[in-house]
Image (cartoon, rainbow, N blue to C red; front, side):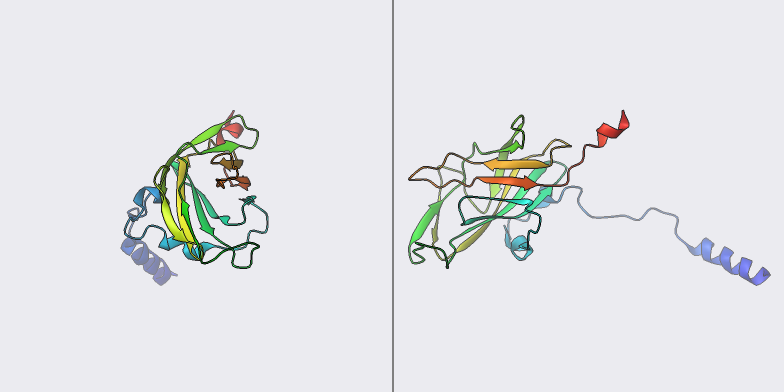
Length: 183
């Protein structure tokens, strides 16, 4: 028994009582690497069994991930023609851009969140010319959703005969209101 106590004392004397240092950023979006603008998330497209990534009337637009950081609501998206889709001229080209006045809107429409920056797609009036057989991943950074807002829509613009907008409805993200239980 005495030997066991001595052994435990030796082990606890050798153990470090300092808090471990962690080099992980508090907000990953703040440390975005421009040299690899969107390559890091291309492989993150995965099935969406609950519909949380929303739906668009334009089949060429996909939301591949949604992240909340300390500063931003980040939407990872992809634009690309479906090779099996109707009326797709895969040998042509398109010019794409994103409207700087785009917003995220809470499901009840009472609150909107402004677009702050983009990566991988220029903001209008600049455009990016792409071939119709290309798939372009890009990232949108909006103001961070208020705690408690878990359902929202992306509204870029009103589509018409000349412009197809990157509008996505029915997105959800886990974002509980932590202050509601502390009253």
